[in-house]
Amino acid sequence: MSFDYSRLTATCAVESPDKAITLPPEAYGSDDLYAAEVDRIFKRGWIPLCRVEQVSTPGSYYSIDILGTPLVVTRDRHSEIRVLSRNCTHRWMEVCSGAGEANVLQCPYHLWSSAWTDTWPVHRK
Image (cartoon, rainbow, N blue to C red; front, side, top):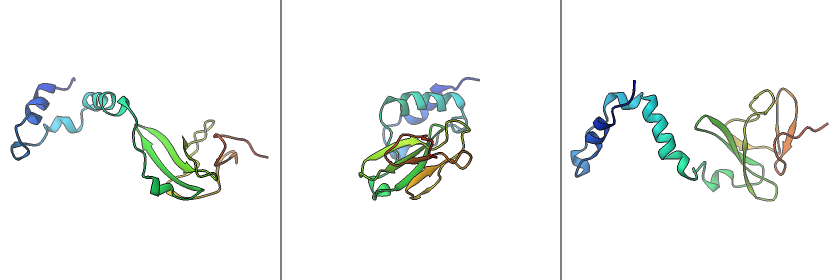
């Protein structure tokens, strides 16, 4: 079933906020509308992942999922901000969650580690 955009347009195209009404109920669960929003809004440019203050010190990290992609924002030992996959590329094991501080990201399955200046994954013996 395709989304009826004419109802959405009629709901949103009002002269002032005091005349606005809620979206039609089907807008909240429509896969078609979600796909259109992803293409028209989120894939058009950069997406903010977190505030700089959330990764303020070397070794700090902040994890987030954006459009189904698990990411981690880190500040390396040289104070550079980096964004990496949060999962091991081999077994898709999560290497971190939430936010905090750590010197190394490590896959709990392989015990592969990634220092903050390296690219993930790096096999360390």
